[in-house]
Length: 556
Image 1 (cartoon, rainbow, N blue to C red):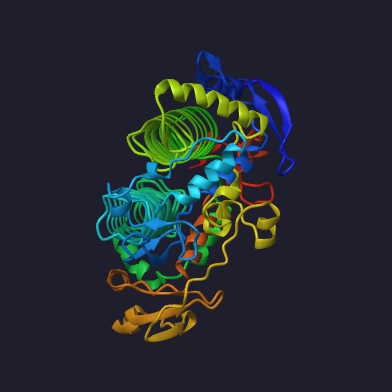
Image 2: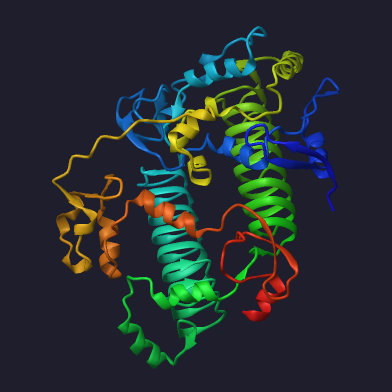
C-alpha cells in the first residue's frame, strides 16, 4: 500500500491532490546527477488532470491543413496552418541532409530565462509537416506508421485501406473506427479488437458478422446484443436457430440503432472497471499492467503513474503517447526513451532534458530537432566536460526562476488549444482558454472549390440512390456549416455493405465515438449487487447497475 506523504492544492484548478511515498521514490530515481550532485525533482504543483491538460496542448493529432512547404514551395498537408509563425518542411526535406538544426544553435544566456531562450529557438527551427513514417498513399494521416491507402486517420500503425479513424493498429478495410485493433471490414467500432465484418460495435472482442453489439466476446452472427460470451445467432440476447436468425434479421433496419438494443444497454449490469490481467492498478482499459495508478488505455506497464496511451514501458510518470521506454517523466509522443525529463516527440534517445523533436541522441538539454547528437545545449555542440559543467548552472538558474521540473508552459505550444487533443478531454471555449493563458487558433480553412454543395439532410437514405458524381460535391453539415467530402474507396465501401452516406462531419463522428468511451475519472460507490465498496468509471448519477468484477462475472 502506498502511504500519503503530502496533501497539495493544484495552483491552477485548486483541487486537492496527494503525494505518496511511491511518488517520492520515483522523483528521487529520475532526478539527474551531474558531477556527483543530484538535482532533485520537486513534487508537482499541478494536479494530475491539469498536468495532463498542459501536456496535451502540445499534441495536435487531427487538425490538418493545406499549405506550402517553406523549402520546396510544393503543396503539402500539415498540422501547421498556413498562417502559423513556424517554418514548415515536408517530410523528405525535413529528414534530409540539405539543412541542419545546428545552424540555429545559440549560446546559453544566464541573464535570460531558459524557457524564453528555448521558445526563441523552437520558433526558428523548421518543423516537420506531418509525423508519418514508412506509409504509402496516406498523405492525410498524422502520427502514422507503416500504413497503406489510409485517409484522415490519426495515431495509427500497420493499417491498410482505412478511413476516418484514430488510435488503431493492424486493421484492414475499416471506416470510422477508434481504439480498435486487428480487425477487418468493420464500420463504426470503438474499443474493440479482432473483429471481422462487424458494424456498430463497442467494447467487443473476437466477433464476426455482428451488428449493434456491446461488450460481446467470441460471438458470431449476433444483432443488438449486450454482454454475450461465445454465442451465435442471437438477436437482442435471445437465442435462435440459424434458419430463424436469417429469417428474422431481414426484418430489421440495419442502418438504424434498434430501440431494443438501447434498452438492453440500459438494463444489463456494467462492469465497474475493465482491466485485463492486471494487479494492483487503478483506472481503466489496462492490460498486462502491474503496480500502476491513474493510468488509462495502457498495455504492458510496470510501476507507472498518471499515464495514458502508453505501452511496453516501466517506471514512467506523467506521459501520453509512448512506447518501449523507462524512467521517463513528463513526456508526450515518444518511443524508446530512457531516463529523461520533459520532452516532446523524441525517439531512440536517453538522458534528454527539455527538448523537442530529437532522434537517436543522448545527453542533450534544450534542443530542437537534433539527430545523432550528444552533449548539445540549445542545439550547440559541447564537449562532455563543457556539457556537464554548463547543465548544472542552467538547472540552478531554472530553480531560481521556478522553471525546473515543470513541463513546458502551454504558451510555448505551436498549436491553438482548439487544435489539440486537450480540447477533447478538457473542452473549453475561447474565453476560458485565453483566461488560462492557453493559445487559441482562429484560422479557418477556405471553403473547397466543388461542383456542387448539398446539405447533409438532403442526401438520399438509400445508398443505391447516390450518384457517382457525389465525389465532386461538398456535403455541408447543417449544425456547423463545415463541409466534408466523400472519396472513391469510401463510396465503394458504403455501396458494398449497403451503408448510407454519413450525414455528420468526420470531426463530429470522431467526437461521437469519444463519447462512447469511458470517462477518465474514477468514482467511489457500492456494487449494486453485493454492496462492496468499489471504484468505477461511471458517475453516481448514471442509472445503470454497476457491478464489481466478481458479481459481473457471475452474472454474465
